[in-house]
Image 1 (tube, helix red, strand yellow):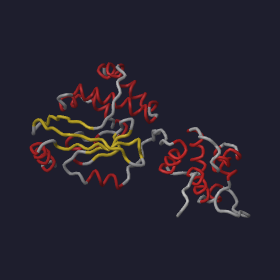
Image 2 (cartoon, rainbow, N blue to C red):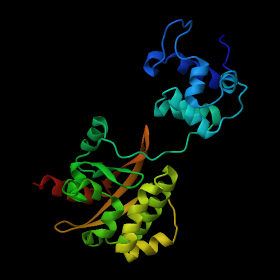
Image 3 (tube, rainbow, N blue to C red):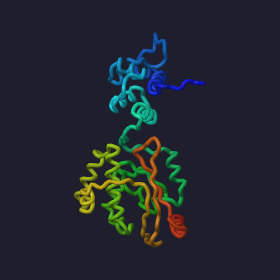
Image 4 (cartoon, rainbow, N blue to C red):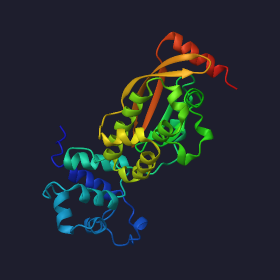
Length: 275
């Protein structure tokens, strides 16, 4: 029977260290008896003492801080998933989510969106910038392709586009919920600095936003129901759910689904008749 690992953190660090190519870090690979980087080389790259790092691998280093773990993760060139695993082993909790500047969406995730012909779907960042959408969202919600990338933000559209108020009967309650969820998301991911310019802009241009922002409400953006007023089809009700994107916790996938068979028929008719 195999013996259980009583030092999983040390084993993980040793394993990751052994898989690194010294040449990739500008370190000569000559006269090395073992593969990978040496402990002192990892310690130097992580800006910690070689003695303490050795203790950490031996299970004697105590609980490292988040800053130290980030240094070790960088030193070992860990992927985001590997970094999260390091934090779970060392601190028994995942690391804090860090805001990332918008990057091109993977083709696989875009295909997921495109596979929902009658369910509007978007992907937004924690700063509520819209980085992807499907055809149904472009037809039923907003023509995102016609908007400059820097203007594709949920809050900006809510408070700067007068058409939104006409389109959403319960505009005020949904706007209030969006502001509260936006505050929560930006604080959770460290995107407050990224969002500060938008907050200042909307506070100047929209008294409604300024008042809602001063309330300091926070909430999650999980699921709910929205009513949309369409110029030809009348009132349409859709349920929405938000999902985290694995590997990119700063991104959310939001999918709208017609609430009733009648709503589905209206949505299908609009999308199929759109040219």
